[in-house]
Length: 335
Image (tube, rainbow, N blue to C red; front, side, top):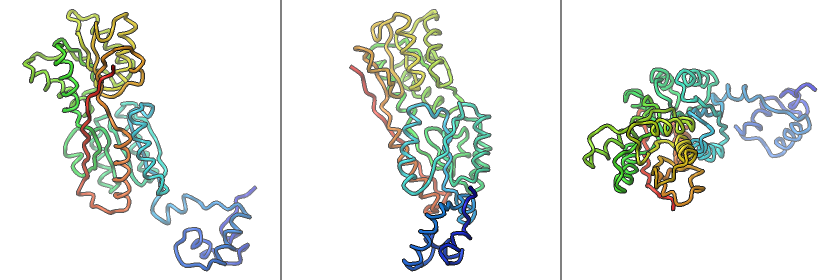
């Protein structure tokens, strides 16, 4: 069956196409009697306005692109849910994309968002894409950075940011292990091309220097994945000097860390203590693990990002005045 047209609706309601448009867009005064006739014709003919035509007329698509490294990660799922709960009430839909920590894929996704004419972009960058980010920002596309910053400060000068205090958070987490007497600490980190990887490792180093430990910590740089958490423990167990404690700077890697320690027959924390930047869903299954973890609030961060997005889309604040929201989280411990 062919789709009904606005001309057919106008004919059935015995009004002009302009009047139908005014009723559907609620853009001008139309009497209640005319509205009823138009809506009756719309329902009778099962008319559906063209989203493309409407977006061209309004210069708005009501679509927001969300590009994160791993949409399956509960942390980014929480952020996305918070964003959706805010912008969804205003009629905006989200397009979710995973860059898989791949700068080339992220670059392609940024280009795709521009081609799709989304109204704004939320980005947790994998790093290495400052020119592409700047090009998008120069086109006056609102961009809200979440969790991560661009590599060079210049690229993020005019961009909104919702993130955590990564350096201080990792430093607090490390201090807990140091206070328990651990000096041989293995660090499971993500790629240093990302700001979270660099800042969290800086936090570990900061805490160790404060305790008079000037030697470089044992570091395994992975890719923020469960598999790399497993590989990190295998690497540490094969090392000449086995660490007595491990700090994992990402929740997905932390899961791999816990899985491999248990698989190796070691006890937590008796044989190897663990601290995680972010909660691990499997953590509570371990008995008396003493697991330290950085409590995060991704949903609240998503709410904040969503509020900023709406202000930017509505042009309620100049793009030259970025809004920065940095969250400071507390260290918790499982019994």
